[in-house]
Image 1 (cartoon, rainbow, N blue to C red):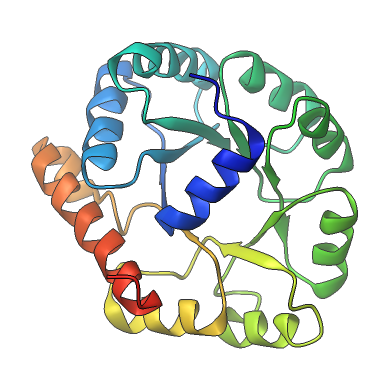
Image 2: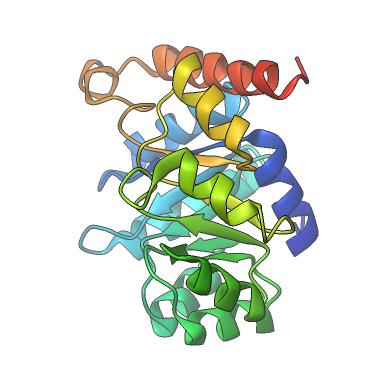
Length: 224
C-alpha cells in the first residue's frame, strides 16, 4: 500500500511519539518495530548509524511491507542527499536529519517524501519551511532552549510544526511541558526503548511502554 506524503505527515502527528531506534541485527529490529507498532506507534525512525545500516533497513522495510503494512519506516541521522536517496530507494517514507541540508530537501521533494531537518534557530526553521519542510525537527531539543524555545518560535511563526528530539521523556511532566508549548510530535530513543528492555528481550515490555506513552500524549492533548 502506497503511503503518500500527506498520509505520512498526518500519521506522524497523530501518533505523537516517534520511536527512534537502530540495531545491527535484522531480527532484533523486526521484533522491536513490531512491538512499537503493537503499542500504537507504527511510524518508526530507524537511524542511519551503523555499518551497513541501509542493508538492515532494506531487510526490515521489505519484511514489514507484507508482515504488517501499518508500519511506516522512516530514516534518521541523514546529513547528505546521496544517503537520503539510498534510503528512499530502500523504502523510507520519511527522512529526518540532525542538520538542515537543502540538497536532501530537493531529493525528498522530488519523491514527495516528508523531510524533517534538525534546526536550532528561528532562521533555520524558516529556511527549512522555505525548502518545503512541513514538520521541522528541533535538535538537540533540550540544548537549544527546550519548551521555552518552542513557545518563543511559535509566537511570531504560529504556522510552524515542530518535532523535537532530545530532551522529551516518556513521563507526564515532560510530555505536558513540551506538548503544552505547542509541538506536534516528539522523537524518543533510549528513554522509550530502554537498554534494559532490549537486553532482556522484553518486547512485550516495549509494547507496554510505547502504549503508555501514546496514551499519555493523547490524554495531554485532550484526545483520550
